[in-house]
Image (cartoon, rainbow, N blue to C red; front, side, top):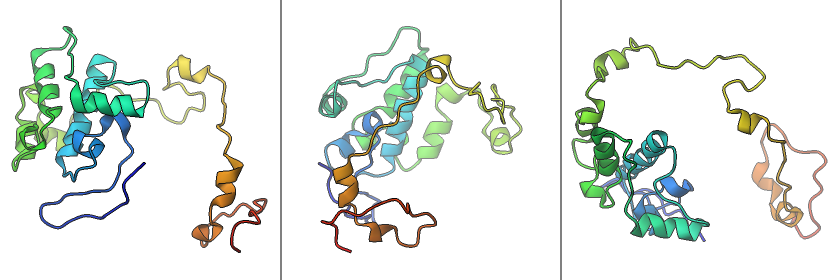
Length: 191
């Protein structure tokens, strides 16, 4: 059950609404505590770990087990990762937000000056002078930028639960550019 959105405070910038980003959620989100921009660095750490290790740093068979893993488990690092890669992941995945890499007042400098990024010329990068190492072909209709495992799988739509659909107040969608003319509101829905 998600907490109700309670808005954003002015000082310090803390948010208390629920973001559904599962394993990329920081501990404070999972624990329903206010959080700030350091949760974004946590999410970046999870994404970076997944890209480097080929698997998520936390796992569980369901949301509850995943959240418990985020709260209690320490991350294991494959031996194939460089010392700098482990260091940046550890820094970004530090459980205490104030101690997290990027969690302090000088977040941008901390990240830019980390040894993992020592080869990045940030000024040239910002001026778009560094060519990307991989450029996907665009305009294709055959899914050539996706792994065959996914493109060969059959397309299966998850059917909507009719009871849930009927309970949705269609007035919420007034003014949208498309309304389904075939949608028949439930007799239980106020008209």
